[in-house]
Image (cartoon, rainbow, N blue to C red; front, side, top):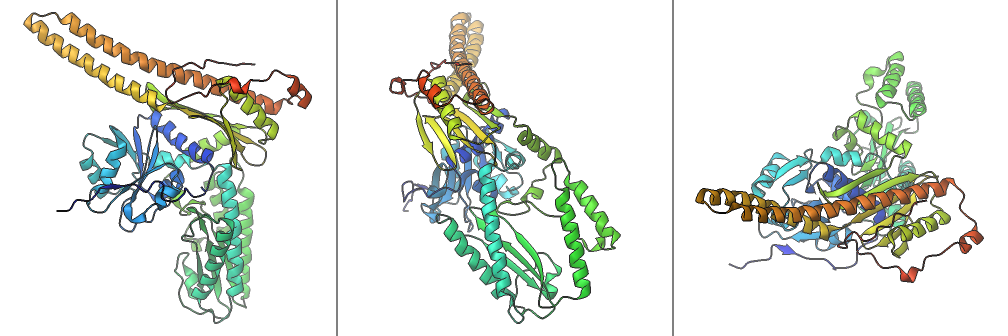
Length: 554
């Protein structure tokens, strides 16, 4: 029987496409997941839903009966795709890609096995993985504990970044274009589907102009008329518009997995007095709802007041659903599905309002392999501020590094050590510092495993020797020595992580001070001592011992 490869590689098949978001933004998302994993002892996270694969990888898969995934561990992030899709998943994934073939039914799990390594605790999406898939995962990975990562991953998505807000704002413009096209095509005698097709085509063409590198996928328009307007999600039909019909237009552009919605009520040529009365009252409720949407206000409180308005007009019985919904990845109702508690929303809002930094370590418990810090600064990302941040990073880490500008974020990078600055709204900046040291972490983990194994072996061996009258101390001391060596490597990793945390805090503090305190003018800066950039080394964060001990403090 002819055998076929279980794994294929499409890496390098074409060029990586222009990403939807900057590398700094995508790395921020992965660092946030890894921070949660580190705190909860999770070795790897296997995302399987459209929503999270798209959010954390910038890759939107097309299933067609095959399984897909995005596996995040403490060192790398890898999409898992079917060979039928060729190199498209690799070109669009922020990270690496593994492709499996269809020739054996378990090749999907074989692909996971290639990258999951010796993970013993894997996070999966409990709100997406069905019982069949869960049983298959347990059978393929005996001894592995599967824990829920769905709700925590969703909470990390609750507060939109500046790049997300800019993206969604532009998409709202696309929805307006679709709404105008819908009105343009509406006339008595025109079928619903013709109105919907014209609106959809207009939006797709505008998306193609605005995002020339984007996939043109799943933008559509719902258009309902007459009796078909009695349900919010009634599909488009071939019913022809009649004079006096209530019309409902719903435009849903999708770009890179993000949806927005434009929803409006129209009338075909004529509207009765009663229709006008109800329409005007709905507008009144809508306007009051906008007035109530202020920081600190709970959605339940807003809904209660709006319900009272409808009840006063004897109209509440006609409201069969809630008020409004979220915008985000792939569907406009996922926030409800995630079952997020109000305190999670409030906590996320407090973090944004107060500018509290997000800090943490990645890695396995006492063996950290990465450190990150994200802080919101009270000022825009000016040229002067960026120059200050770069100079400070070079002094702090004693490394020249490289500077790049994506247009959305600026980055100083030296190996795995990165400092990024980007806009956070109109008058604030997001400063992100992150580093990884995966090779040293693997050595520490390996040494720790060996050490523990040696100690256990020594204890068992000593018991046997004691029973036989032999010298147990030499065996026991050997095991203890190996264990102490492993612990020493782990301690070195922790010292490195502590140093980086201190340095990150110093850089962030001085950046905040630079925003609040006017920096020297050009002449003063020119006269101040300068670094000899050519003399600075390139710091190898992946394996270098703790040698950069600069703690430049003001």
